[in-house]
Length: 272
Length: 315
Image 1: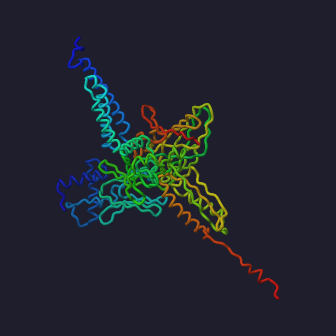
Image 2: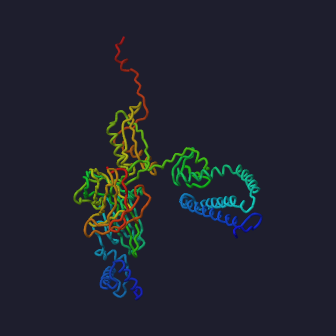
């Protein structure tokens, strides 16, 4: 039979065809995997990095095909594998952190705990996420400083994402003088919050007398705001509440302590 | 300045464009000539120079403006002063200025073209004071829907006015204004809910009287196919799917299809509330976007309608 024709050594035409089939199957698998990867990562990675990743995956699968199939052609890759394995060991040690960052980056891209534009705290570094790359995440601190955080750190750190939820709550503690009308003050604070367009209607804000403090009656106001506007609402409202309380004649006292010296008793005491 | 035939042609075309007259309305154009001549006095009958600004000053085209109350098409004689909102076009130093004043805020823009028309249309009320959402939530007096029932009632919604500049068939928005008190809310939970533009309305069973600059009328039909009573006191509407019409006031027609006691689907109908109402210019094209709850479209009468799913309750 023609398939049993020996080409060289013990390699027949059948072996050659089998190797070709294996290569084609692996090439097909590589194509399917890279297409799916491209589809799922195209909006999550920058184009240049995605293309690099797709090439690595594609050539990796083809290399595997060669390793699997070439022994059938009496091509001994064991020497190459030993040399390759040794080389890989050396490169692996040298590029351990790079590989860790790369793998962490891929997991971050899949898990997406942060997005570009998010306001976050990653391992104590606070700011806005500007870019998520394969090896690192780029942030811009509140002071405008460029911060590059290795993806390994991002992956293993506690992440506080301030805008992951659509709405966020914040709280004010407002002290008013004991002589001021607390009910009136509560109504003023409620009115200011109601009038602010971005302080959310629901969940409804909560305003209540929290504590009879040493120097003041302490009112607590808890207000919800859209996460992306949280800071601006928080800063605007506090000023508006202060102005409204001033206008309403509500005193915001300094810390104070009243000391009695007992003068009255001395004055009224019988002489001699 | 002597008008040769070429410049006369350009001039006539400009006037026709400005006044939207048929191309051969020579009689009307001659009227404009006469007004200009009589104003300038010294200019001879055969030496007429047309200044569109002068036509503006004479309000020559005022009668041709298509205005219905506040909304409609205006020329540069536009002057609106309602509910603390003042919109006008002024001419100073040889240029036209669009000026809008509301509550101490002033917006001023130079209009380079003396021929453009100004369109005031109600637009999707999800833009002001900031574009934080594309959803409008209206809370209203509770309505208990009986089993297998359908009820139509009317709600008010806040008005945002889009000011468009139209020239050569091109329309561009130059300003957005609203005097309706703005408020935002959260529909759903903070984790997976959505921010909405909030508005509180009474429930009306006849078309209510509204101040056109402040409020519009939403005709809402609630359909309850369930075998149980369902209370409804809020509706969340997707802004980019809104179909606004205007006449005496702005209007929309929407439906709320109850799916279960906690869930409903809302969608709009592209129909006027009253005969003769005109379709408003849309700021946004209808397209399905990845908004939580906006998942699918349905076909009604061969037309695709975007559906917003109210999955966080109807009250």
